Length: 148
Image (cartoon, rainbow, N blue to C red; front, side, top):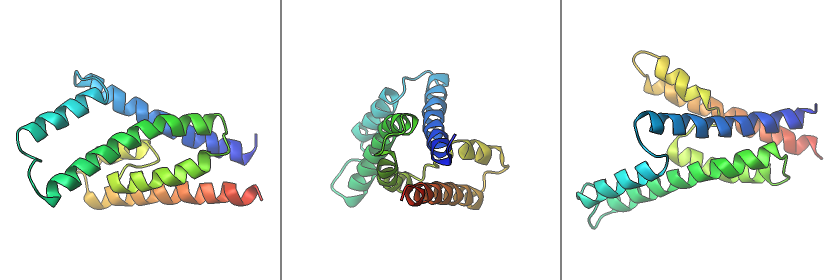
């Protein structure tokens, strides 16, 4: 098996694992994945917590929308990587913008590791996030260079 194939399967697996972890977490709390989040956000905005004429409302709404888009993009990304589609790397780089805005690790087990640290350290979380994204970006650049 080529290294490119291994890299693609790894990142496809990480995206699939992120979907699984999210769905199990929401189901464990008695919710429906994605639907519960949208309903909760709409309830919060109906109570006036994030409504009003201000930049705060716009930023919170934008970040929530980007997080939803990131979750949906995980399905596409996993499929692109597992099928070894030629657009997988490009899509992953675009997805990195969403990951940076929502601080979601590409290596899905890192947030689980962060939850094990007592107390949860902001610096440890930032270190795991940065490490995750450096590894992903480096591995994707390596795949690009190895194809030339």
